[in-house]
Image (tube, rainbow over all chains, first blue to last red; front, side, top):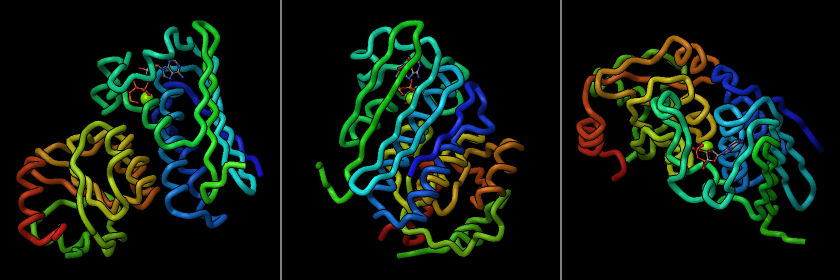
Length: 141
Length: 114
Ligand SMILES: Nc1ncnc2c1ncn2[C@@H]1O[C@H](COP(=O)(O)OP(=O)(O)OP(=O)(O)O)[C@@H](O)[C@H]1O
Ligand SMILES: [Mg+2]
């Protein structure tokens, strides 16, 4: 099963709706709490990064027997130094975004920690693509 | 000890600005934090969340983490969009004039987390 959510950059009214939508689907299918928690964290962090740092984009949820997959892309500015962006505490969030509670530089590290497979590709000026896989029941086949 | 959101409101005279129909939720512990990435990673379902953030982004975090209620501390208020969004998601938001530290101590004295 697949479900795609649109993400609008800088739209804080809608922000979080994709992640909540993902969580509701996983709950209704009846997945275990722990995997729902991990996917929700990653969906939220990736959605918020598009809202804050990216341009309009999308989040695609894929549910299969043995894995749950999140693919998140946006056509924004991209990330110049991915290794640096993945460091805990690194953030380019604006003063305004920090006042709203963003900018801890924990989003990408959180996603890496809570997914079983974490792939990121980005180029300056060419948007950002994230793919995260979550193994159902710890299954890795 | 488990408290209900309603008991917390009554004990400490907290203003309820949203989610009045969800005050029967159980509170099993708490988390303090103003950085959303910290809260989304480290809070637990059933927590009461103490924060100075009144911005609408707190609602999605609380909904995703199954937070029992948010207490906005330090006499801060919730933005109008926050209240509207919280109503939509069924999240109770309470207001306190106390600091996060003072409120945490009081909740501890009331037996929460013990
Ligand atoms: N989709 C994106 N487009 C452009 N830059 C991005 C994108 N996602 C992340 N980045 C860059 O990577 C940095 C680190 O991201 P990360 O999510 O870890 O922290 P943050 O968003 O700054 O803060 P937090 O997530 O803790 O609120 C960002 O500050 C930004 O510079
Ligand atoms: Mg982030």
